[in-house]
Length: 222
Ligand SMILES: N[C@@H](CCC(=O)N[C@@H](CS)C(=O)NCC(=O)O)C(=O)O
Image 1: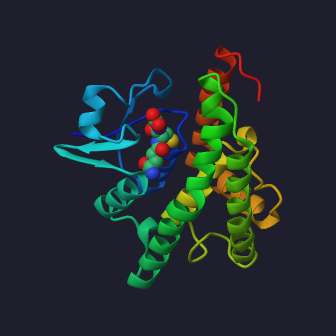
Image 2: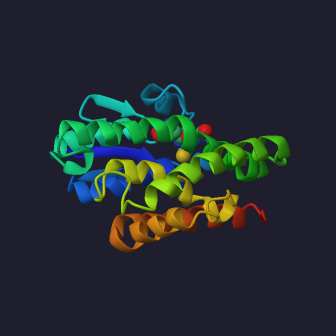
Image 3: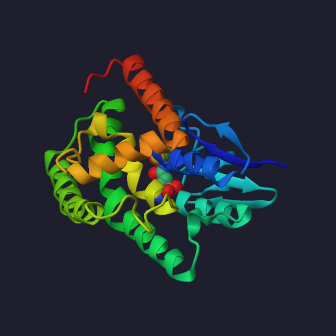
């Protein structure tokens, strides 16, 4: 039975899983849910993830949410080196994944919710929140940019799960305009991922089409 991934094609978190599954060589079946219709808050979906968030993975009777955890599970299942070739490398990848969740993506998500999410419910962004998130992202990006001046990828100079986690904010960056383009090594690394990882390029097109389409239908100009 195929491993199912529930999520919306416009979601940067689903993108992290679907883009990583391809180079891991693991078969997944994508089950589309429409976040704009609140489909992650139906009683059936809340059985899978009571937080009402996607993606969710279902492998037989095993249910898992949080995309970083899903990616680690898939990597172990596929025996993929995207989660590390040695114990040391594995912990370095985990260091960046934990950092990404707590110091990086959270502020990108906050920006998305303020700048885009609120527009769908007829509200406008709180400037103070957008500014706080931008300051946090800029401080983190300065460190990342320095790291990427001497590294081709985040860990070990080859693609790992850390790259998918940390590249995630670029999914919405053209729309949220978070200040990542100020950092040349960060931009060059993102371009490298788009050029070298076909699934990262394909899922960018998928996210762009979905979100730009939803904005157009709702008559929202950013
Ligand atoms: N940390 C979570 C984030 C999940 C998340 O924020 N998912 C968003 C889409 S990117 C969602 O499902 N939002 C639906 C909602 O807020 O109603 C993960 O990595 O899976």
